[in-house]
Amino acid sequence: MRKTIVSATVALVAAVSFAAPSYACYDSYGYEQPQCFIKKVKSYDYYGDVVIRKIKICN
Image (cartoon, rainbow, N blue to C red; front, side, top):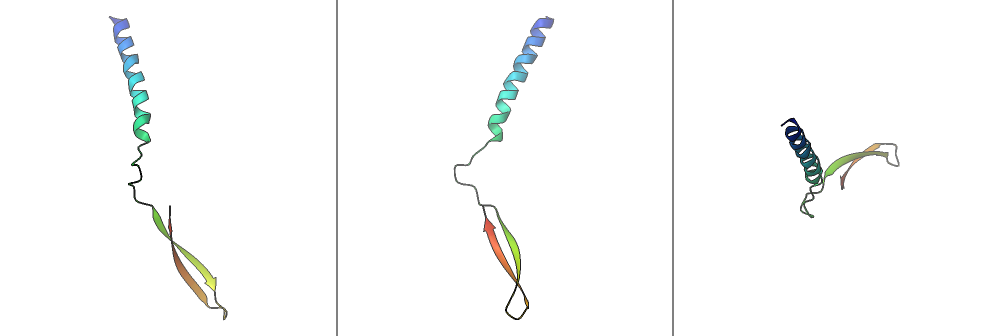
């Protein structure tokens, strides 16, 4: 009886450990939205005034 319970537990753990990584790499086949963020770039013009530009960067 004890060997049956131990072998069933080992089989269940093995099945779950192989099934979990397959869900971790879910790919939506190009339907996902690009992840964008706004980057602020500070520079100076000819007269020394600060010019701040906002650039949108998407992956």
